Picture 1 (tube, rainbow, N blue to C red):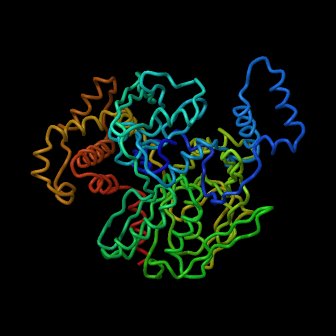
Picture 2 (picture 1 turned 60 degrees about the vertical axis):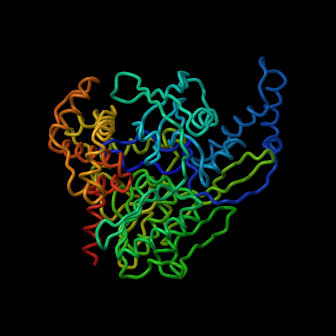
Picture 3 (picture 1 turned 90 degrees about the vertical axis):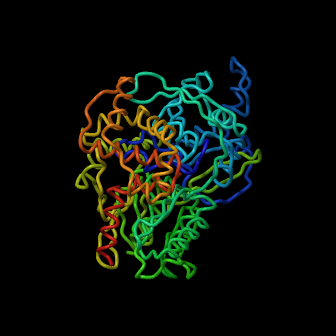
Length: 539
């Protein structure tokens, strides 16, 4: 990935269903650098595989690079095991290490190659791609006038094209659903810092909010720092937002739970055929462990692995409430094995279990590739994302909490409070405007044209949030801008509220930054509001 962190996850309007989950997610794996034989010698233990490789080398009608052949054979072999066992070349391993712990110059996107197409999974909050108007779900079909669609492009090729020296420019050609023409975006490369917690702030005088993007080497420290700052501002109730969080390091998830659970409480345990049970329990180090300190965790269908460990530990121990929609369902643990050429196999070695013994891994017998990740579309089609009653459970995998609450395993974490995905037809026209980029473009142009006026009237975050409003004339101008691009329609009352929110957030960000952007976007977020109500009721 060009950027493994700081995805814009929940910021994309909630009516839009993101088009892809990260295939072969490197989630929840344990850092365990074991030196093993090279790929060729490993395969040599199976005479048939080695024989086929030798036959190709000796008799195939064209030259085949041995290294490429080995890489392809390893990928094909591992793909038959489970959806999360994977292989990284030496170059990909280096990039992964940077993505999880460092800083680089790039355009600030997360991407995935699916069906020979480069898909934007997420954009870095406040990064160059987001400012330019790139959206999750976009397909990058060209870079600097070079076609990259349907040509067998690899991850490393993408990284070479998107990363570069600070200040250099690249032009991305984007195909966007419901937009008739290819969109072009000129983006200047910038330093992309790796932060797993892009923002946190006080929602009220007592309720704090922390958004965790993914679980990296820095997550534990970032979370502890955020907790101390919010506690210093009077927080006694905490909302942890894990929506769209695909996971990451197991140790990071354990550290988050350790801040919340009293000493001795089970956080998670792992177990596999060749991997003895290992228990992880809370210590006394946490700073938010008191019964009077209330917790809510937000999840959705894209919350996976390490996110599910946190949600499962909070739910099983009845430490807090879970709000949102059923999580992804990834309960497998990968260990890193380093081969002689420094390439890496991330091999599934165990399942992880919540404190009460739930494994939340969903079935993958029907397919380990595209079918597995398309499960989210199946949920959408079955109505699960809109109606709680549409969710089916495996009764053989249920457990009971200390207070008698029944919980289920075998397919993600089910929230205590279900919040449906909004899919009303009232949003169709607004979605088309949003996807076309005209709302963002208008906000940028408006902020540039009125910067002095804005700074004089609304010099700080508080004044902007409470006093600035988007007028009917401004929305009319956005619609006219959309009409010129062939996007036509009528705004419903709900769509007007959405447009006002996003215009206000983008305009504010142009001169006040993220400190105003997120409070505006989340001011009327239904999931957050439900969590705040529940926390108030638990006081």
